Image 1: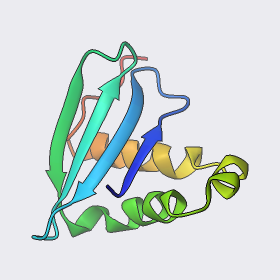
Image 2 (image 1 turned 180 degrees about the vertical axis):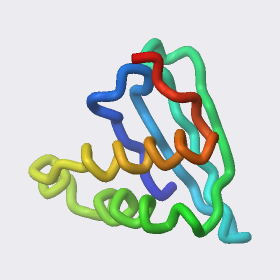
Image 3 (image 1 turned 120 degrees about the vertical axis):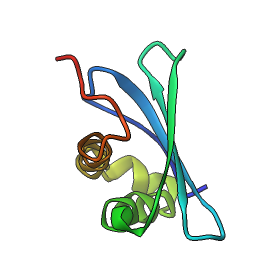
Image 4 (image 1 turned 30 degrees about the vertical axis):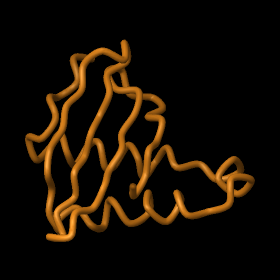
Length: 92
């Protein structure tokens, strides 16, 4: 598990998680606000600059995570997934 994060400030999503496979592919799973629908995709290294800060934050001690906002990098990653067509664009 690379990360499992709450998505703050998004009108449609509440969580995003990712795992890395041995083939250097990354599986991404997102959960909608109601907790009912999920979207998933496989991404490659082109998303590594978006994934790295999320993965790094996930390795921090819990007390440090609580003091360190990950909202900006999470929003950038969600935006990149939407721009690439992996997630539907928001309806807001």
